[in-house]
Length: 249
Image 1 (cartoon, rainbow, N blue to C red):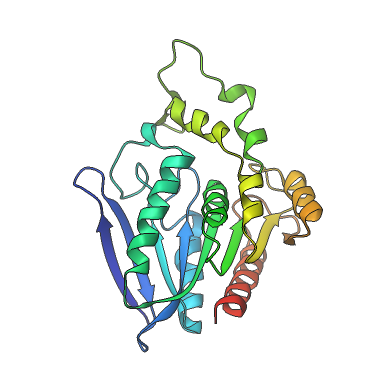
Image 2: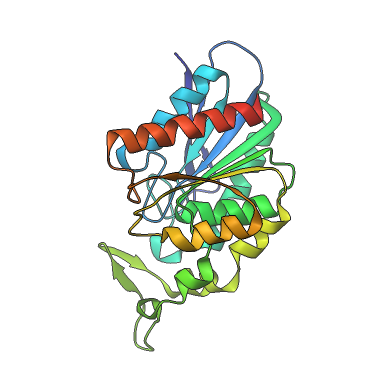
């Protein structure tokens, strides 16, 4: 059992929608913020965030999952979204969470895919964060955003991506920062989980980055980007919940 509460932040037309899940008993709890990926939302594929949330709540940890502006139930236009607008959204949610009486001073972040890039930028600017968990993260964003198919022609107003209008701000902002460098400012507990057969965010560059920096990397052998097999996703949840409980409780 848990307490589930929805919330909105911001002015009408630009509201962020989110959900808080916390234990029934107790007054304040360690709290984990969850950052979804590109074209994702607060549930993400195969309900990963709610499923992880339930495991954490059972251990005495509260969670906050939300939709970045332009995605899911949050307002705003997808064409105006970028990694930096999502970072600003994360800051807004963080301020809200810190003001709640149920939130203790022990906070963690889970970032999935593009949310892993946002999480890396966020943690690099918030050394007080106790735990950072990155799932299949776009840490090497310079390499990711400088692909030829991400180049805008002069006549293009947007790119049609999965039936969504993706604006040039997404690419411009994505190239303007370096998550792999900013993450170096974070010295809290950090774990990267990545599937060895990830078709969306290449595994080997992340593996090399983690090795060169001496970071903890857990490889889910054979797993794709969405961990679409029961044993893969169970390994993801088990490793993740154990890490967050160990670092936050």
